[in-house]
Image (cartoon, rainbow, N blue to C red; front, side, top):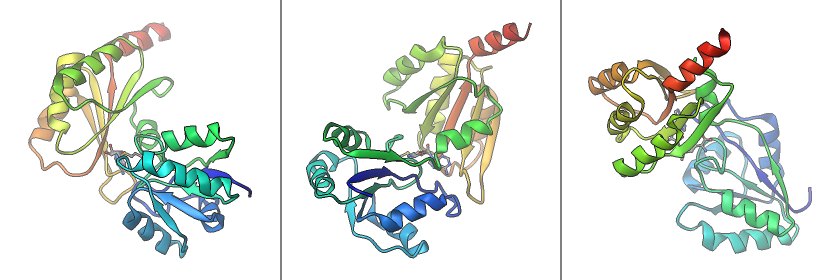
Length: 235
Ligand code: SAM
């Protein structure tokens, strides 16, 4: 192992969901670059691993990159992890990975937990082609525009959403896709209260209004065009 940046996915809730290879890489590297050190320390102590940590989050990432690149150039190996799931998927990582590649540093990705993939494979919505939007824009007008842009694609539309915005976001989705479009909300994936809430946008929005909203969500929408496309394909 010489001068390599490993991208290491970590569990999205269930600590058993870490690969044997990820554990070995975390044991072998010189330093671990992580988001919230408290989160990563919890995982590392569960795995009985002790390593120097460098905190790397959205607000400090650009400042940290030269330091991390210089450690790599000194011939040290680094693992990049995030608080949960796959680094660089709606998490910091992209700028560091780009900079490492520009500096001819070996970048090695490990496969592993990712909320997007975990959610879509059990959604019951088409998985042959989907589009992932990360977190949507917060302002309603911008969010609507972003959704309008993908509405006519015959693809399952997937994005991440937090509990305090989910109701408002479902309302915007109803305006854009129509209240009959199929939606699946995946919450608490891999955890004790894992749940998939399925139905039309109207049904799911009504159901969500009546209950306490806890946990982070993956939202998946089947567009009307997609339904027409797949039924025509089957003819
Ligand atoms: N990098 C992560 C990944 O690979 O999925 C995503 C990090 S992003 C900051 C966090 C978002 O991912 C949450 O707001 C939620 O939308 C989704 N997420 C993460 N863990 C989840 C879980 N256990 N159940 C449902 N959604 C989850």
